[in-house]
Length: 455
Image (cartoon, rainbow, N blue to C red):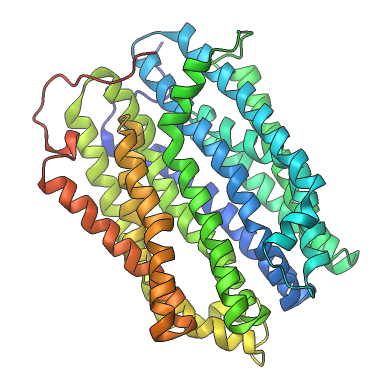
């Protein structure tokens, strides 16, 4: 019987859109509900609420990073093994990775709940927003396993050839989040606590839909009882390491930026940065959707050694990443006031700050998509060192160094100029790798490709 999606024989363009359209739809809805979180908190709680939530965003990055690491790592290996008809090993990788993920997130969540006050104090959270930040932090930590498991299982719903199911689960969870945001904040007056509860419950519903589908409909992947094998878990983590680092770099950058902005201009600048961080996921998730849409195509055909199909997938993804990047940059340049006014009143100093720095930040989207697609490609072809190098440089090292340097010349604006400049420098690194013939697959001729998977 022919699979719903034939990764070996279907046209690459058709495969890309079968994954991309539902994935980007789901990602956009997810991004929109993050934006609505910001709107409801900004309008219902105020700028202090925005600043409080922004201080907790790094926890999301930590949890989602671990979920992405295991999801990308395990699904990449499983695609390769399924291409070779090795279903038993694929089930083992899936099951072991899920066990390890849950154990790690449980431990992290417990630590964060117990030491929430100490961690907030260490991050120099302003006293005006400390209580709200701790409340939001602890509630979100309670849902840590749900967030991470939801992220992880999404990769395997797509592996089953059902990207539309992944889309429906994300959209359903997002809509529930939006509705509960309104009820908890504006009707019940729960403040930031209501926003945290809504986020967690929306993700829980999404997770339930994915579990039900995989339990009842899965044909390729099954959960099995298996002993812990550190070699498998270690290799899964290595492949997904760039995704983890990307999230951790984002978290670290937000912490550094919040500290620098607090020092320069206080909680108003932090709130303005918080507005950007509510919008940024909506746009970044679209680039992530592009990368995730080629992952199954690239990994499966990598397992079969079909280089031509891998090349086509990468070039197609890069084309769309560039196109979306141009559109996003124009939006940020021409209508910053309209974007910021969704979150805060125009007579606020936070509004003025956000309108001033948002166009600068949006320049990064011209290059961010390219970098994210290339990293996703390297992960899908087991090029661990390259994906990690690009992620670390663009995600934290360059942006942090540039923020410190440029602040001396341009004040708080220099902090935001560091973002697009770091993305440009990462592009230059990729071009150097390409010209020095270290970009592997995209430079090879058709033939047999030897993969690195040795599990």
